[in-house]
Image (cartoon, rainbow, N blue to C red):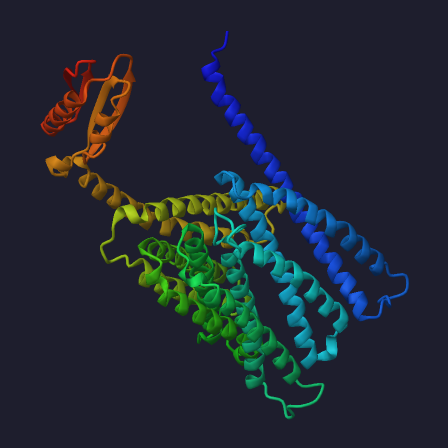
Length: 549
């Protein structure tokens, strides 16, 4: 026969699970209805601006707009009236579900509306690829209405999310920053291309000036959207786990990796080598503008967020440093593999071929940029706390093992292919040089980090509890006391360097004065124990002490 007291918590857990599942379904339906409503409003407003004239013969825009708006609109309102009744009295799980749904609608509506308006303004200055201002304006207004409604809910004191409150504005700021970065790269690329290959006339349809103006519209519009989130919505002052994570990834890590890659690519174009350098001017004209634009824009984003990193705490600074160090190491290792690949290629074919020269130039560039960045950020010659880079080393060993395994499998496959399928035709070195270069580079870098990991492990073991002062050695304290002795438990929790294990037993709790005396006695006794102490307390307050090994 089951015990009712043990079944009651199970019923509570099951009830809470059902409640959370119901909230997940309701918010999922609300999200879908809002997406349908946004599409319906956009289509209906576009048709209204065209005077209800279809874009092409046989178009069903009007039917779609009316059905999506007149059906999804009332259903959205009814479902929202049901959902909002429970927003004030929800547990953390249900509150997180509401926060996720609100942030998803917020970001998607913001993206659809902002992109539509930016396309509209860009086509005003560059109408060559115009798709019709009615559709763009209708999409911007329709999704803008959904965005405004969601923005008011998120910022209202009554319905604002209590769990992950910064999720929506942080995601909006990240989206605007990415959009501004891409638009800025496009703008700078066109400007650099115009400087490297200037045209005789600036005005007129064949020139690039309208495209420059359109790119400028995208850039300044996205920057304005980012500034509104970053400054007006005060995303820069939000400090929590999610905003710190997005700050490290979007603000520092991605721009840093992009900067290093663009710098390596640009260096490979400028690197003077005796072979394969006849067309470097043409290569710089074609490939230089996107690399220069990517380098300038990513450096600006990286330097700005790096300068603000001191306001995020030491955790964000350390994590971002290790991520950039890992990315630089991966770039340097890739360059080393490419250099080995090119050197092996020189043994199989004449080194003057364009492929070998281009691989060698790119490999040297990646190796130089990655090595310099890794030395600057990882600081291998400077003492570091071993505990702070344990995650870095573990992740590196995992990635190295994966790369080595794939490279080894490819090398083995190429060898068997050469022996069994090609029947000796061709060159085995030519077939395995690329994966073999990756394998050698990974092995060399992993060897260094293995010795680093071993030295850190030895240092951590020397810093263990054996070398700590006696007062700081963690000791176990196991208390077996009658139920109701909470006063003793609270007092023992205040002791430092104690691992407390509390085991309640049956019986009457001791009197208050007995618990006071017992607390003083246990506090004095535990300091003289080398490893731990077991204390058994009876109802009268008398205790038996047993030293633990």
